[in-house]
Image (tube, rainbow over the protein chains, first blue to last red):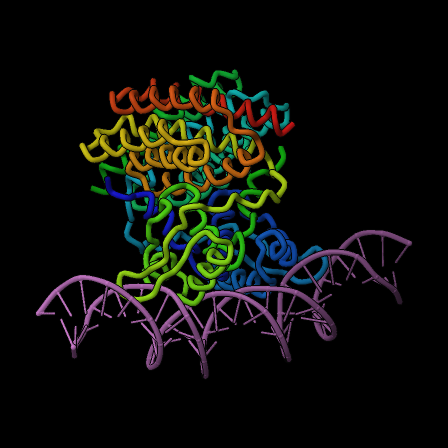
Length: 232
Length: 232
DNA sequence: GCCCAATGGCTCGTATGCATACCTTTGGAG
DNA sequence: CTCCAAAGGTATGCATACGAGCCATTGGGC
């Protein structure tokens, strides 16, 4: 039996240095639509506290985002660091590591999240939130779609009430998006996707875990076969 | 809608310093039974490479494990760092953070892993491996049970072929074990657990994803309700 | 019996990251 | 108009981590 467990446990303890990981996180929060264009990031001091790094490191990361035209900073009270309306496309680089690894993890996490969310009794604000993100995604333009779509999936994870699960989905989503950036985004896929989103959210709001899992699984399988087809 | 997504994305970028995280990983590999008592850890140089930290840091971590009587090191060719036959019980400390958070993530990951593993065509060595770990767990003494049990669950995750999923299960398992350390381990539970393990592995080997998921979910729910009962 | 490869043990200079303190800018409150 | 709270901008000294090299020990192969 190949000791995959060793691979898993003796993998690198850190993905990069503090600076790189901080950039990565801020980038994620923008790309996944957690902080939308025009909105303000938390203050440097707050980010430093929450991310557990020094303010110096946060500033270096923000400086890097500024140079790449993701954000702009303004001084003074009511100033801050704001996400630009037009955010650059990600650099193409990087080989896609193990496509199956990403897709397997993603399916487990997201199908599980949908099922879990459907099994909880959601509060009114949560229900409203889900519907709102669904609407955002369904009316999004091609340019916004990736971000709004990610945000919707993240909202489903949030609805499980588990911070760890939400974090895992966010991480997995970023890895998926890296793959998706290499294949075309077409109108028909988009319409199909929206219909599936509709079913997923309905199942969750109806409190039908089995249906939620099933519809989410179908949705993910669609993207997965598209990816496998394009990425050989 | 409470912005849980922000909590997830603006969480600390690192759990501790390089030393602490290295200790944690080595400890995990021992506690989860990936390196069994009497076995040798990879060499310091290899660990440094694989964990992505300097050898100095690896050595400091190992030194810490030595002082806590987890391992012993021998010099010379065919030397190395060996796991002690008797490993100490974990320090009780720490408040259990969010019990539901752990249990939710665990169920999503492990039920998904069981389903995924059952849906793959497993090679002979993988099938043999699963049966072997099942046997190990079913014949384990009370003292060994936690470790053998963890190793079996990890083997199921490995059988998905996804390194990321395996890593996530390992992480989640450690968090679960922290909780389990606070409740008694009784013979009847153990027998019940073994019967469930049997069903799970059978479903996986039979290639029945739905049954694998169902039996794993039942298994996890059992432990979950036990935990919720004991931890108020 | 000698050699030597592979292991753990050790040291030192450099780079990264941190905490802390202070400065500058800004716009609303009083 | 003045004040000041809250934000970004800057500088310094210390702690952590790293890379690289060398030493010491051991046991099997020749």
